[in-house]
Image (tube, rainbow, N blue to C red):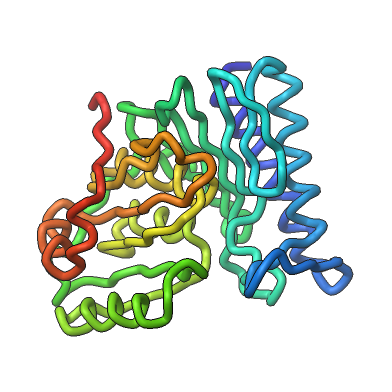
Length: 265
């Protein structure tokens, strides 16, 4: 079984386990890691399941998981067992499991599984993106005045900073959406459902897989690994259609300093 096959088996197993917990969430024990930052026994169990499958197949690989799996190696799996935990614990059916593969600090592959809709998104560097095995190639609106723009909420962003970003997009004519799961927001962009997404403080497990999927679908995206501190410090996460990206630089001037991801395609 090759790397992609094992990754798909792991992310599907994790997502299916997450769905079983979601369907019985009234029995969950839920803790709070910080303001509006929830974690449940489901998050920990799903991460353990994904790590178990990957470690059995690739015992020399490393891990970086949101719920504590950390070990360094030239090949490293970055895991978010349940992205959109607040949605998950509140009964909102918008969450996913994410998995990215980093080799020698290069993002080489990503997988995101949405168990509610049984949708598996995947991408390999320079080889395109797929949804349930079918090639994913999208078109986006050219301007904010025609666009649907996704936003994420970060506790590191002040209310004034967030409202300023929203106001700037609205003044440019955009409509806004905040679904509540960064990885799935990037998948929505990869499909052309959204035209632009920007957050300055997403964690690596929230961003990496979705950024590669969006890039391989034809979007302009940020290079999360451009910072040597990507494992420990949240980095800017940007994705946009190629044309609307040019206006993004004017609407949100802070995006001008974001390094873009280049692949070998």
